[in-house]
Length: 82
Image (tube, rainbow, N blue to C red; front, top):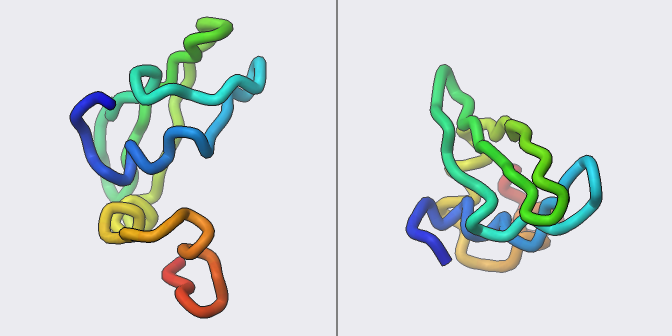
């Protein structure tokens, strides 16, 4: 995996290209910028080559950065963080 924020690494395997449905690889994602509570992630699909920008709320990014369990635990009733 490429170096980068742990929360971005954790998203690999959970998000798909809106155009072709392929899962994004870590190399397909990079931080494009941050502004006023948002993180902009550049996505370039390795399968169909379509590009786009994902917008992540900083609050969500912080929760993902601090989370050590599986992604499902972020939304469970017991461990709800978001």
